[in-house]
Amino acid sequence: MPATCVIGLQWGDEAKGKIVDLLTAKNDVVVRYQGGANAGHTVVFGGNKYKLSLIPSGVFRPEVKSVIASGVVIDPEAILGEISRLRASGVEIEKNLLISERAHVIFPWHKEEDRLMNDVGVRNEAIGTTLRGIGPCYRDKVGRSTAVRVGDLYRADFPERIRKICALKNQQLPSLAKNEETRATVVTLDVEKIIADYQNYAEQLKPFVGDVVNYLLDAVDADKNILLEGAQGSLLDVDYGTFPYVTSSNSSGVGITAGSGIPATFFKRIVGIVKAYTTRVGGGPFPTELHDEIGDRIRDRGNEYGTVTRRPRRCGWFDAVAVRYTSRLGGATELSVMLLDVLSGFETINLCVAYELDGKRINYFPSDVDDLARVKPIYETLPGWSEEITDVRSYDDLPENAKKYLARLSEVVGKPISIVSVGPSRDQTIIR
Ligand code: IMP
Image (cartoon, rainbow, N blue to C red; front, side, top):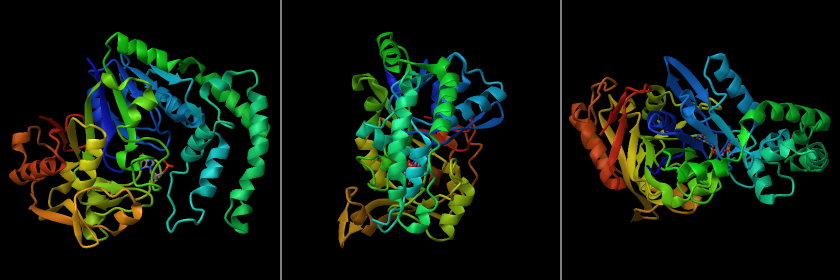
């Protein structure tokens, strides 16, 4: 069977983890291929709630190989924390986790750079990163000279390389501070401690590290069932998202091949995950954002607070212009609509079907954030439903108005809906 991909079609946090977990049972391998510990997914398993950041949700099934591919940036301390929490709850991961030796490694200087450069005052608004060192690590990867990959941790010259990098970073860091006050807070890197810490991490990670590319290409040749799990959402894609208010990787469908090394011809099913509404964390334009009690109600009902940073998420109506764009970009074969239960009890529900830009109606997603910041959403108002739907298990049993809302959403986006989620548990899922 060819590979299945799960990607977020909004600004992240679309509850991809739940769908990945659901589809995992039908797969032999689950792959994370971009992003890092900026992602966070919650998986409810065996009555327990697990928060995972780097480790794929497939890890709960011993028969499934969980792979962290080359496009991911790895914070060793974060991943070891996840591994020890999983071990403490009795989850066996010894034989089923594989980490790419090509993946890049996050170091303390990346987090410090993230803190200093998140808001350098060049633009009106800070990017509002998760401060996990993601952008600086990808910057070093593309810049090459000071980058360190997982495989490098095991080289004899590792300490020497780190000494050279630290000397350079200790020179550069103070110059990144935007004022004297911030400069006074810049940390000096403790080189020998970093070397010792990372050698210790490397030792603990050793059993999991291997050549992921060959492993995956062999899996492709053996016609194994492979599930690829995107992190963040397509609108945060560094090339196709709301640049510069994006993450530093290709988080839309275009990143799957680059991040995993699996050829595009192998992907046949691409499930685009959306919430029944929209959320965003961090800075950047958000045309359908609600600054009123409706937005607050969505946040409360949907528990819309970041898994990683606990920041309250910005909430708004479903933006079908944005999702039409990202679903076409990612080649989504279908949509999975999450958190539909959150919309129960609203008298009416708005669906953004087009934008108005400078007095003209447009139905495309502008490439420029300043244009996007100026668009006004054009809404269709649909009747809501009062019933709670968390116990509904078949599409036909959904309230008529919920079905009408989904049908219109699917029509405007231009993709069929194959899955509807009405609650966090595995069984609160309607498969069509
Ligand atoms: P970074 O990925 O930490 O550099 O953050 C860049 C932008 O992406 C910020 O707006 C973050 O809030 C956002 N972001 C990063 N990871 C996630 C995620 O997993 N969910 C939602 N937003 C994210």
